[in-house]
Length: 164
Ligand SMILES: [Zn+2]
Ligand SMILES: [Zn+2]
Picture 1 (spheres, helix red, strand yellow):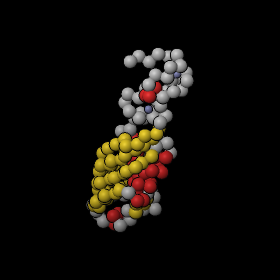
Picture 2: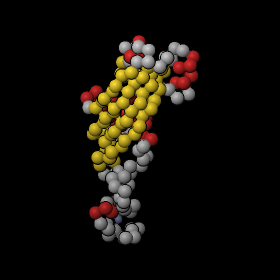
Picture 3: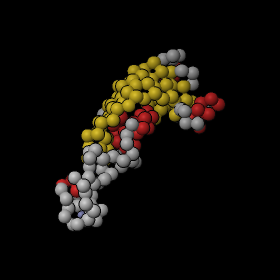
Picture 4: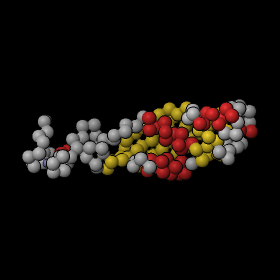
């Protein structure tokens, strides 16, 4: 979701409250999540955009409900809640400062007076999300020998013994 900030940028020290959820915002988050093999059931962002000189700063909190496939047993699961604070800067890239900030990764670009708010929120949320998602903390995974789901009990194939 690319948010238009042209009007905000016309106002010196202008501030805009944001309360996003569902619709286009959720679709944008789901698209980014899909690239990581994840799904998004719910997405919400509440915060503000502030216009500085050639820059827009974003502050707020995001909450997501994610789903994915368990790293150990491969089963799909949902309902994983991720919450994070978001504090990011977007900069115009036509000035040297803004260009340097975007190049160094300290700011996201403002392109055609629009900012990619979903990407900024998603990248913050990913910091709070474990790289290897588990359907539950004590997921036993699959038997490496027969492939049975050990969460459903011992497989009985005589493969590696799982200690109780
Ligand atoms: Zn699992
Ligand atoms: Zn087995």
